[in-house]
Amino acid sequence: MAIITNAPSTHQAAVYDKPGELSTKVVDIETPSPSAGEVLVKLSHSGVCHSDLSIMKNSWGIPFSLPDTQVGGHEGVGTVVQIGEGAGIHDFAIGDRVGVKWLRDICGSCVYCIAGEDGLCAKQSVSGMFNPGTFQQYLTVPVRYLTPIPNGVSSEVAAPMLCAGLTSYAALRKVCASPGDWVVVSGAGGGLGHLVTQIASKAFGYRVIGIDQASKEEVVKESGAEIFIAAATSSEELVSQVKKLTDNLGANAVVVCASSNAAYSQGLELLRPGGTLVGVGMPGGKPVAIASAMPGPIVQKQLKIVGSILGNRQDAIDVLNLAARGVITVHYQTRQLSELTETFREMESGSLSGRAVLDLQS
Image (cartoon, rainbow, N blue to C red):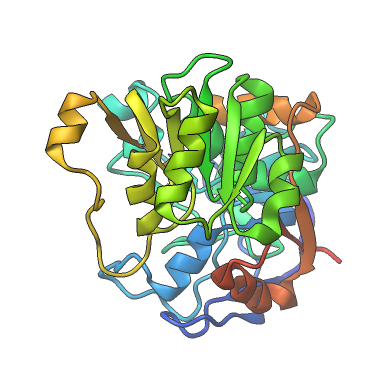
């Protein structure tokens, strides 16, 4: 049985009005009703991710153009206000606080879904890319992929955890390191990187060396990095500093959060024998191979290169529980929906520290 409460006939949303360019526009759109298996969520906040910028500008070379009515965003928090037919069996009730993630839904039955590798599902659907995203006040979503938001974590903090926090947590589970080991985080002061730094140091017990622009040193150190190195440092000097800190061996792992080809090339040079590079940031533009990924050194040093794009539903619950316990938090700036274009400009220039969170109901 469907459960319906009142919702406005229209609501505000930010659309990518010039796909391929950095431009958004706030418009009024029709408020949908939930179909079978869906709920209508009244969104209060949405994080703004670098992936949203890449999708809007088509930095990844997606072969299909977005419509100029595309609502982006995939880090939404709000409350359930309507429940569609059959959706009530999933333990969510009217008024429950829930989170909407990058993955809007998965098939749930393929070999990857069964293994907990949700991001590899061939039938996945994505929030904010050919599906409605979270840069709006109301959104219908499949109920089975919603994440419950625990008490003790604010909606402003929870929103970035649904992508940046989830992605960070999943990436760090792949580093093959032990508490006390050295982990380098490239792009450590960004929206993703400062969460990787926090989770690495405060939840996993790693010793973190953070690399980013000099202006982000304070955020990087507040996030738990033991050592900060400015990104402008030459590769030769960077390798030298990391080796001095690590008994002349190199780091046990490097997590590349920066969307930079140079960061990937640099990262391999910072590893000790047997070390692991985990790639998270996705450089835009023409694909470029990792310059330092020569077969000889990789074989001789037994290096590992691992990609990490998303976590699964349990990872989302785990990282939100870390936030609810006060182990990690988000350095964020609250913005209005009308400020989205300017927020993207700051992200593109690299001047935004931490994460931007949109207040959707003010």
